[in-house]
Amino acid sequence: MHKLLILSKRAGEYRQLLETANLPEIEIHSATDATRASALGSDFEILYGEPRLIRDLLPKLQNLRWVQTTSAGIELLLDPNLRRDYRLTNARGVFGALMSEYVFAYLLLHERRIFERYKAQKEHRWDGSDTGSLRGKTIGLLGVGSIGSHLARTAKQFEMKVQGYTRGSQISSDVDIYFHPPELLAFAQGLDYLVSVLPNTTETQRIVNATLLNALPAHAIFINVGRGSAVDEPALVRALQEQRLAAAVLDVYQEEPLPKRHPFWRSKNLLLTFHTSAPSLPEDLAGLFIENYGRYLRGEKLNYEVDFVRGY
Image (cartoon, rainbow, N blue to C red):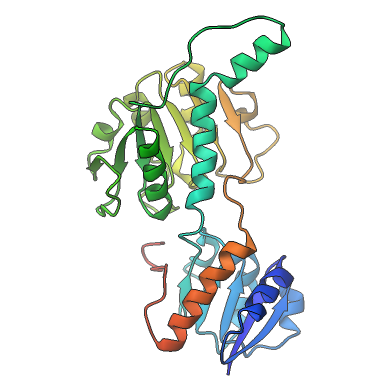
């Protein structure tokens, strides 16, 4: 019998979904915080939940063999001072549709001039000026994993040209042209939209810096739904102030919550959301665990297993 601990603020929802699935050879326990989890014992083989909660429990679980997180971000578990003698899988393959909804909501907001139309309405002013269109525009994807691939597929529905920048993989056939290091500046040429879906690794930190921003056309718009660490934040503020970039949309930041005095709050042509672009919905994530648990029982390769060295 495999002993599972669900450790999440929404542990009750996850537990109900897994119990309904009637998984074989499993004993399910759940807790909403590390203190309650510790009281349940230390002999759990499988952990399923939020990295922030899992981190504190790792040293206490001597029988641990596998951790499945409910998020794509696993930076808290990659600390070299933490144990690495277990298999770590994160949540991928379930956020693509949600991320696409978010990104294309803002692309359409810009092209269809939604704010301007609403302003005209409030002023009782007829505005019959033309709008733009996504058709024929070029979107550049920093990172083309499962989320980037979904964004590329959505972009093709709007007849956009898609460019992708990756370390080496070319998994999406919806990308028209791929760029790889050291072709970052060539990738940026001619983009109408730049979207970052990069994970947090040593290679991606502050990759969106002054050099990259200067390589973009002045009419370009930058959107970050990956990790805040990918952005040189002072450089982005300057680019917006100096109108070297038309606008930006940010959902993630180097420090979260965003400090009250951060210049982003006052930056012109910058729209902020609060790590809400793709919520972790139990009904989506439970299916991911169920699929991986079947693989675990059969001794197969787990989906979305993380390389501790590479960081993803």
